[in-house]
Length: 153
Image 1 (cartoon, rainbow, N blue to C red):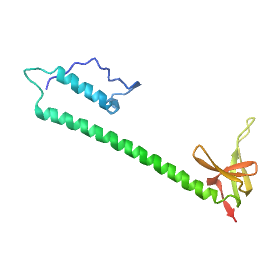
Image 2 (image 1 turned 90 degrees about the vertical axis):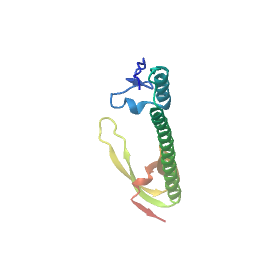
Image 3 (image 1 turned 90 degrees about the horizontal axis):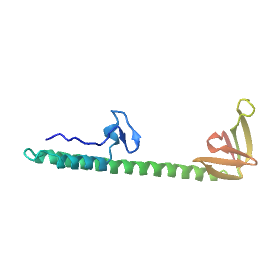
Image 4 (image 1 turned 180 degrees about the vertical axis):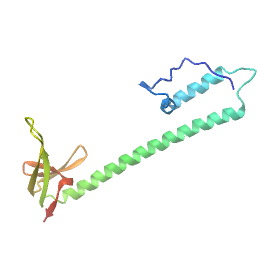
């Protein structure tokens, strides 16, 4: 197989600067096909790429495509599990509406003071989700559902 001289700059792939160890991991399928096409266009006509080398590269393309699809599937599954977990937590928390709970929240520090934990006890008026965290509203206070230490009917 012949060597290919390419003007492609591998130090900056997809708009990000990569270290030598990451560069190959950052290549996309398009980058791989561009390199393979350049190799085929610039090969020595008296010593062309062998069929086994060509099949090996096609196998690599298939493996990359398969890995991309697997990664996308795993990402979708992870997102689905997180959404299901938030939904289950919201369902459990909504059962607390009208019930008396005890919990706490951290009061933000002001004027250079240290943040303090504030205990809250009372009937839950409503339940909401804020940045993925389930919140219980007790009067004018809001606490994380995870901070509940006591629950009574």
